[in-house]
Picture 1 (cartoon, rainbow, N blue to C red):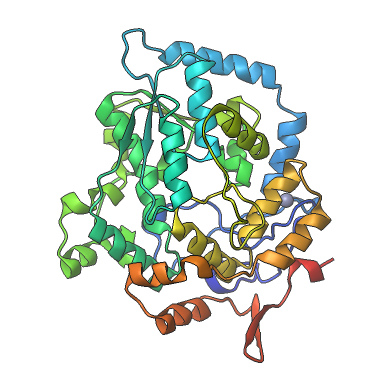
Picture 2: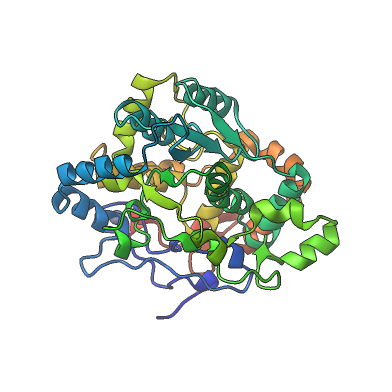
Length: 404
Ligand SMILES: [Zn+2]
């Protein structure tokens, strides 16, 4: 197959059922990413469906959800401790999904969950409120204690080198739960959405547990690992940080990890996941609140709103892959049966390209870059096969509303 920038397929195709295109990378081991790496991409099936929609059919037609709940009861029985110790770790941020998982495990399945949260890079007011709403259900929580200056530098490098400012957060968050589980001697970690919900790792749709290579590495060699597209040794030397500082971002050695026998499960394997229903569950069972106004770049009021960097993340995604925040929201709402594909396409046309101006100055101040540097990164990250310049404006060459 002929490929363009980032190894993207040159032939842009849209899913027949939702708003997603084939220009989307598969989940990757972030700590191996550098500028030259070609990504792996999700492929559509023979009916022209993206992985998320393929899984949606499996979810609605193939899975017996009563049997799956029985599996969950067995899992809880296997791990439940009766001595008052925590028996399950629930990672999250206080979004609707993590509220549902923790609340049900505690109240419906009588587990004793400990929460853990990797703090947002720049938390928003609504993010603070909802994090509190999560804890206030009646939980204890572990927060990460990251070197903030290192996190700032990594975010900046990730933006400048990879146009991927969310990378340090993604890496830190992935490693955090396994590390807390080890430290606290908790044998079960419960994540929310199975990757198959997004169409990644589709071959593992009938497996309840996570592929641990997300946060493990066979042999940790600092020459092999990259953060923000820069080799680890170079970061340590240039910015004068120590291994202790950077440890939060390092994968765990597979052998060391396996000796702990911790299991990582997805809640959405056991319970039919509908992110729209999760929203109502969170509203009804906690003090979770949506944002008052529409989220910039989208039309919804309740997804990924706890970190200012989220807004930039979705915008850079739009630049690199031609799909922004309204695409992400609409593809899920279409599968959940809340809107139809035509409505999704209109929403994408209207909101996907919206610039995240609300927090723009915060991004620049945080990364200590200026407007010109920001724009240079954005423009050099646009793949030629997706973008063209018309006058002074950039336009998508093949947007969904012009495709058949
Ligand atoms: Zn689809």
